[in-house]
Length: 146
Image 1 (cartoon, rainbow, N blue to C red):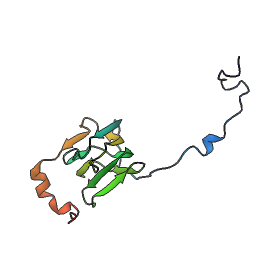
Image 2: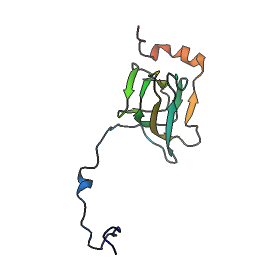
Image 3: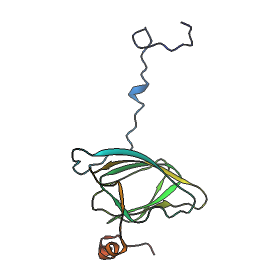
Image 4: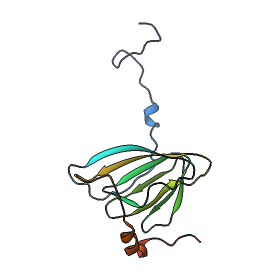
């Protein structure tokens, strides 16, 4: 075996200590109850410059995200809108909570984010919310910026 070939475990290879500091916790959350049979999926979402993103919608289960590139204007029902930048995390509980905004906050670059979602059994991962429901629930939305 040449010195450039990898050695498998048990062949006298020194153990790395890097694993002890390789993990950085970016986010912790207390998700709601997750029923048996949930399907988990990880998706990459990419919006061009200035794109408003997905219309108001909800997810059938919790979603955990990481902003890879650019900025997202993020808004969940009951929370003020906020800007999430590359390297930051976000999460939402799913279920009955409306996700109002996930659009690209920049007009000069793409936004790209990674999301891992838990989908309730037999339900779609994303359901758009009708205008009539948005109107009925307008009192649940945080005040809009001036």
